[in-house]
Image (cartoon, one colour):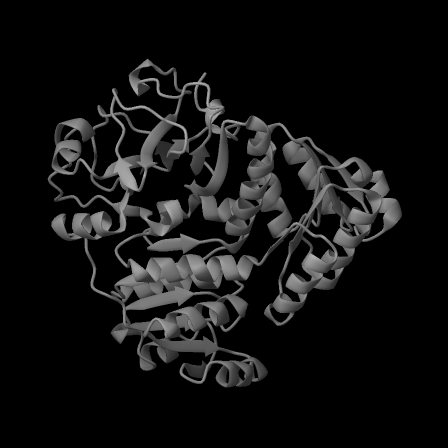
Length: 453
């Protein structure tokens, strides 16, 4: 596909990072020549320096022949204008990044009015991700599949686990046949496992099962953590606002620490059930005095990566049961798993993954073997979890899985047929109408036909 990304700062760079391995023709546009040069040097893609809202600049970038234009600057009004100009020039699809919660409803209206195909709010994506993590506090990451019937969570294998030193097939698979280990992160590397993989203490396991199956598994293995009631949020930005609305509605109590007086006033008006404290985001004595050590969860949601990391480490040191840190630098996010800091979320990676879902959905429509329902990333973007609905054009329909030649580093993790979950074994098969969960390190899997060679 021909893709033009307008705005190559943090979000734009994360979008390019997700799309670059899929053999797209990508051009970046930015008013900052340094950003364009960095993208050119790192990804060997074309770039145009200039105002992305300009007709002339967009023509130079080839927008008139583009399959997709992504407007990802930091200014909503510029993004709106970029998409309007792109549509006028003939771009087939446009995606707009929404940065300001006060404009969210207006952008949705404009998206429909001017035929923009998708609007993505990175801050809403991050808030929803954190809300899911707080619902399952023992999990580092939580994703939903199959219309909410299936869940995939990440947990750390304890040193005293009965599965340490045993292969997946010999013990874990026998003890929990309805739970699938989809991926294992070890020493910063994602492993797509076979049954012969021997588990080690500290492994980060990506586990899929039904919602009730996950709860039963966590309780049975001693990894279940009691429900979160009290949450402290550092930073009062849009992500914190969206998060507080969700978890207040779920019955949790919320304390937000924010430095800006006017923002505190706004949050107090919009979130009357929350406790809003004006204070510095590096005042650890204030955090402690306002109940950090009595909190069930701490979320560092400021716009400063370093302050979030330090505050998260402080909360871990104070034995807060659940700590979540926001990091928006892609390179920093990809190595955060090496720190013992709890869960890490990146609004830019989440937004980029949402756009990747849209792009792969366009491609899978051409594949004719399936429809892409969902896509998530594991370990930054080292591995992908995809959910497909299979149609009659799947080339290996009804063939036993043991007879399929599946791509390397790829696992058919789960099949959902008529509402029933199947952990696939050699004699199982994929049929028309099935929902299939695939885990892969291959970036070029856009449809179920591309899972097999």
